Image 1 (cartoon, rainbow over the protein chains, first blue to last red):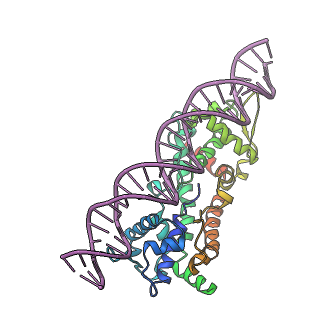
Image 2: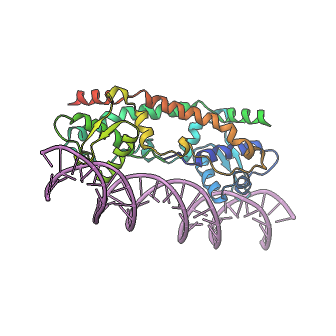
Image 3: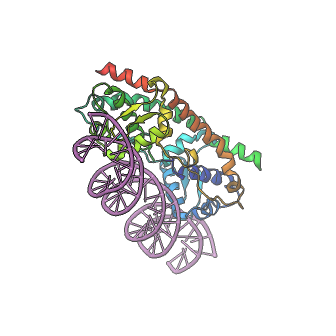
Length: 142
Length: 142
DNA sequence: TATAGTTGTAACCTCTTTGATTACAACTAT
DNA sequence: ATAGTTGTAATCAAAGAGGTTACAACTATA
């Protein structure tokens, strides 16, 4: 299964908030316009980003802002904020290997550290990329 | 979304086939017993592993065998055999960013190389682990 | 203070994927 | 000829992704 589009969406949202912070009040409707994603979905993502301390949201008057310098927000921060992994694990293990079988009895403990290695490799790369990198690359294009 | 249990299941299956190759005819029913997964699902996974050239299956008489030395089969081989990723991409991009918005117009091209970096980091780690590693660790436990 | 624009959230919908299950034709060693 | 297997289709339930409508709660401001 692919990683859900909530991730790229969340990055898009953060970059948008920062890019237009001086020109517009960046509301869920505004972000819905840029992303072409339903405003309720945008608000859900914003809520998750807020819970992770990455953005701030003004109730009532409306509008979102980024909560820290872009260089301090990594892809991993965003990934963990919006991607719901069961127990934080990237790999879903088949539930009930047969304990009466020598392979079934041990497969979980034998595989676990390898799966962690793979997940860690991915998360390390995610944490090496910041929103500032994205903003810089975007500015190049503009 | 987590990576489906088909992956750990496929690894379990391969290790089982190799472990019991001299003692039993390893059929989908046998593997179903060790994994606690429905035999039709096992046959489906076996079919994917066969298409990838990782196992051989005897029609009629029944029984599966591993098609090459364990050290030549990596986690990446198995991952690619059983995990169905749209266009082989780990990340699902939100479909229609607004082209009239400077962010929406460029977000895809700005993010793409970063997403590839993450996917590559993960695949590199997957390709560094072989079924022989697993077999060795399992033998330690037995 | 009344209002208008927002946010937060619940409820419901559709689509897709996963995994289970039943059923059965095709195959092959014996 | 038979018994045990494989390959595959059809159907099912459960879960997750996204979309959509609706509305109460909130707050800046007129």
